[in-house]
Image (cartoon, rainbow, N blue to C red; front, side, top):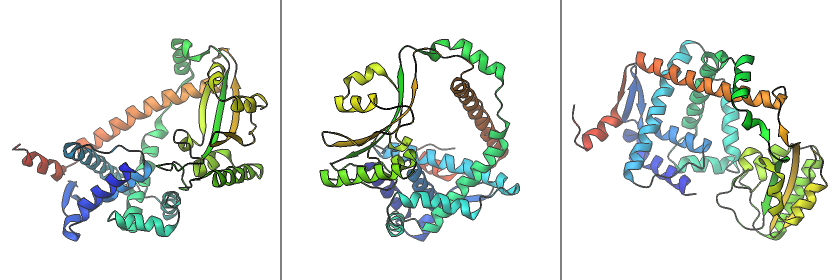
Length: 343
């Protein structure tokens, strides 16, 4: 909640003075204006995508974070100009889908609108910012991601150089869970902002979720929407691979549930001291050396190498675009002047 409070306070500080303040120039990119209002909209959109973001501890960190956001926004404008020239602007349906994903986290459309207006951001301004983000991603997918290639020889070389990473010393269980507690949770980690606050409501909630699983609902989506697990809800409940020995220290009721499960199965509701869980045994990884021809091994290697290449290419792409542009950062100039730095 402190992150949310800071985001709102910061956005309000930028826009509290009314229209003249929101239209004051923060930067320009090839003649394209970036106002403090644009910067406030960008900050709110970033908070919506990363609600766990840290809170600046003092005014200097506040300025540092604001400068960083403006640098991102300058880069965004650079790529928007290129995307626009290539006709890659995001379609209305994509923007509305992204907006709906954010609305869901705030309950009702009215509550979401109240949040935006409380931050001094018009819904249309956020819609514009989301279109910008989607458009930039379209451009990056076309210009960068589509050019990333990982050869079989590169994958084999990585495997041979990291054999220990593919050795499993003991049997591991790939687990996921949906967790509901009988006490209030702050912040609420699920997309529906849904929190049980007493034993009766917790039992009703977890059994309703179990019924939805029986009716064919996807475990991952239910975890995203309803789990109260601060660690794994955002991952769709996926807890990763857990060594068998680590389970020896867990509650005996959880161990009993796992022993009776086969890969792919869901447990019944498991109650442990005010916590209610549904476990999903995704798979079992036996001990031993995982072979290079194992599909999951090859896919994990491909993903690591592809991510490395894409990060490099994206960085190079941004730097090339900056080198071609005419940029003026008015916020940076104001901060420099405030602290006595002169040309």
